[in-house]
Length: 80
Image (cartoon, rainbow, N blue to C red; front, side, top):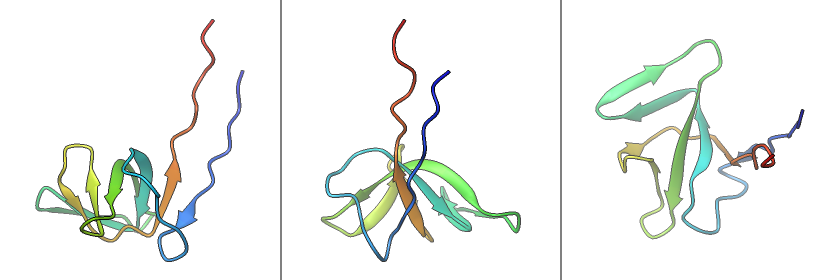
């Protein structure tokens, strides 16, 4: 079994330095004209930050709002 830690970074402290898929977290995320609000702790999605327009997007290129944290994707299991 492989265990990995996820290091969450606050978006006001650090942003991804390249356009790459990362985990994104927000207590209220908005995408595809639907607001997802969770009083139980928020949502984690896949997304990316575009430094050119300083906006967050999900993996289908829909804008995301209310992102508070992000983390690099875990490495995953080693091949057998």
